[in-house]
Length: 312
Image 1: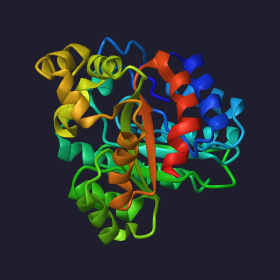
Image 2 (image 1 turned 180 degrees about the horizontal axis):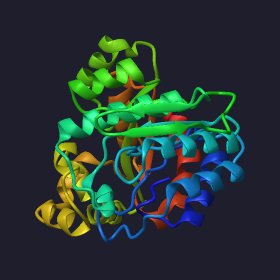
Image 3 (image 1 turned 60 degrees about the horizontal axis):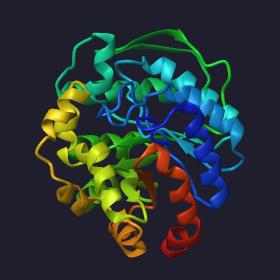
């Protein structure tokens, strides 16, 4: 459920359709802004997840990912996650990351360096994990304080925590503190580091953008219009302040550049190869982001008939 390209009702309706055609799990982005104006949306994902939990029966839900350090205090994130876990009957996983300036600037607290953001994330994970136990929590950290907090509605099944990784430090935090790891690149070094610090045997979730359309040229054009930011890399993307900055940073990206990195069209083999790149290095799950909010239904119908059988 890519909240940057669809409104809240459409996101839920598309998830219901995805469950019906046989997708195994779902993820939802947690943004205040889209990356580019052409995407055009950014509803509050926690309301969407609540609606999705009621509208579906069995498909797992997950944030991919929530930043628990700026817009949200970690104590509030723990309450959100526990509530969605209860509403969904135990189908929710909490994906966390160190955030992007694009979304976190709105509260006016400034944007600290990456090393500080990692320290903040580590404290946030400690707080959230402690609250999930159901007791009172008091915490005095360098970045966060918690005063006699307690979750009064605690799920029977503890919410699994996933951490997004991009380098050695985040891999260590994920290996030591998380129940699963999240990455958007099929880099074996990330999984090796995760395993080295305690992640061996835990789920690892990847994500790739795809752009299905029977007209490949139309697919490439749409991917370029809405997703050309994807190639900038996390270190760049996390520092850009808004859609205008992303537009400027990607003004020289060509449609053919996008087509080289994102499967476009309706040739199943290209989509399968993109997923295989993750599977071959050890990812256990891969989320597919169909580009274009108005193009979900044809993608899901095609996936049911062509893509999912080929992937399986």
